[in-house]
Amino acid sequence: MYLKKSKRKDGRIYMSIADGFYDKVKKHTRTITIQSLGYLDKLESEFDDPIAHFSAVVKKMNEEKNIKNSPIILKLDSKKKIHINTSSRKNFGYAALSKIYHELEIDKFFINRQRTQNFEYDTNAIMKLLVYSRILNPSSKKKTYENKDIYFDKLDFSLDDVYRSLSHINKHKEALQLWMHNHIKEQYNRNTDIVYYDVTNYYFEIDQPDDFRKKGLSKEHRPNPIVQMGLLMDTKGMPISYKLFNGNTVDKLTLRPMLKEVIVNNDYDLGRIIVVADKGLNTGDNLNYTLSGNNGYVISQTVRGGTQAFKDYVLDESGYTWIGDKYKIKSRLYPKEISVTSVTGKKTKRTVDEKQVIFYSKDYDKRAKADRAKTIEKSKDLANNPGKYNKATSYGAAKYIKNIEFDKKTGEILSLSSILTIDEEKLRKEEALDGYYAIVTSEMDKTAEEIIEIYRGLWKIEESFKVTKSDLKTRPVYLSNKEHIEAHFLTCFIALVITRIIQHRLDNKYSITKIIENLNKAFCTHITENIYCFEEYTTILKDIGRLLEIDFSKKFCKLSEIKKSLASTKKG
Image (cartoon, rainbow, N blue to C red):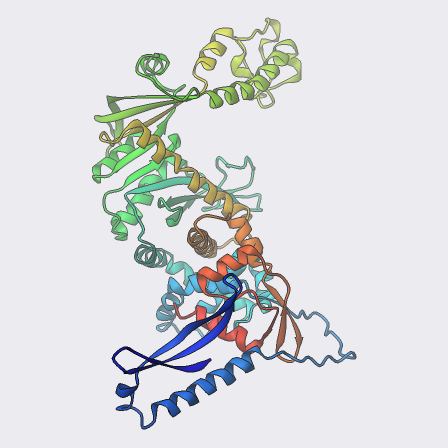
């Protein structure tokens, strides 16, 4: 670097600090301005001798640059031993997680709420450990605590402190979700005109249910007690809020409490929303609640479970528009009568105006027929060898058999005396509806194509559930106290939000699985004194580092530099 003095057309001298470098592309030396200083005559009013002053500044900058870029000389002791049960490896990838955590000011949230408490442990430090580890190395709370030394942060608390903090964390779960929502709305221009809602469940490694963990319809077909989770998500794939329900709560009963939580109990300021959900949430009570709040819906509707008049409309070729040679769509405005439960439990009827959108795909048609072919083969075997089956083992295949009966107590087939045959008429009726899907909506002004496109976004929330179960390993849950369980899911929610934000900032170029995998490659090993050697550098780490201003490329790094880099991620 050098002090550059440029004479302008008016004769005045303009000063700046510049540096030169060789441009490999243009193959000549180029100059870049490091810092503009101003005109010499103006600087003379501030400094006795501007040239001498800034020459000294440049000299100091060059000295610091040379020190920073000077080679590191290592002196290794060949006699040095490794202490038992110690590791020299540390993770630096969590710097990216720290950046988002502090941008959302989750640290401030917990620090502010701990000021009025009389416990000594640092809730924010515990939360950081739980969230970072849930992303990078998901395991039990005990295992997470035992592995806390892989991070550079000071995590000065006990395992008992971790468990004690869970009750405190749980008390603030609704407030923290709202806090994060407001920060995301401000930082990422969150659009809540359309919100996606779905339900999944998580199992526990226990046999006996309790008041919270109950046996219900497991998405993974497991016999274990479960808890239900409802998740609300925006169009960018970023979670807005979640709510836990008892394990035996059916999906359709979760939507109204979820919407009440974010719209009535806590003011998320979502404005008018269009709720997008699958057919399991399509009930009169849910539609009525949504419309009564001046909101809208886009929700799938069963075709096979519809009325005969609806099926006739679906199969009527008139009105369809083909898109290419594989897809066709049509729609109509149709008044729908729904059943609504009053506060007294009485059922009343209400008619709502609705747009029905029918979508057909040849690929879906072929897939449905291929899936059914296996069931038909089982049905034929059942008809020929009924003694091999009972009610449980004949599941799915029995619906295509005529006049089949089961013993209510034992589940054994009772119709062995008669000849079992395939119900060809029922089979033909089902096959006729293969490939057809129905979506119903309150949004009359939107085209059929727009409604289909909106509904397709539901896959993002389904993918989020997969992320929580695979990458974040949210289940099985090894906690029994309800408050602790709630706190566990809050840490998982924060982990999901942080990874989604990183993925969004990378323009969804990489999956969350790949992002986590590469952050786990940013490990370094303590060599000697305060020097660490980094092991890997990847394209994904390069992209993450560029976006979040974190340098993952250094092979050797001093501890002071690492700490300085981590400190920069905490400035929010």
